[in-house]
Length: 103
Image (tube, rainbow, N blue to C red; front, side, top):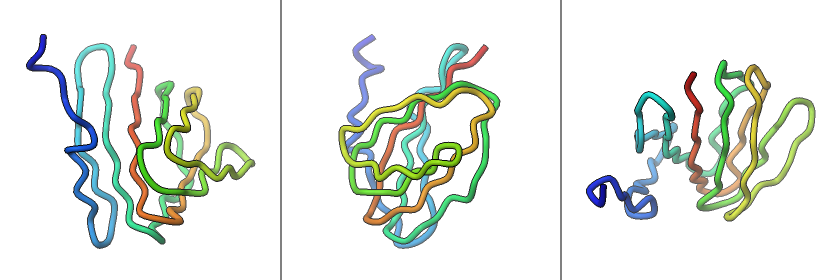
């Protein structure tokens, strides 16, 4: 089990442009992905068929949840139900952990 422990902060490798994602866990129960977005990067509105949580690790971003825009920062954590519209605009270099629950 100790081989499954990962250091999320050690996995950060901020791209100069675009969005970089690294799979952290992918099993029959969960899929967890570390996302890195440089300042100014935008992820357009989209949905997921799975419920998800987001944990912000670094930077500031405007995170659109449904119709509401929230400025999120390190330490913020929230839940998104399935098929919930969301989008992200990185105000600074931005890193977050997305966990999707399968099944």
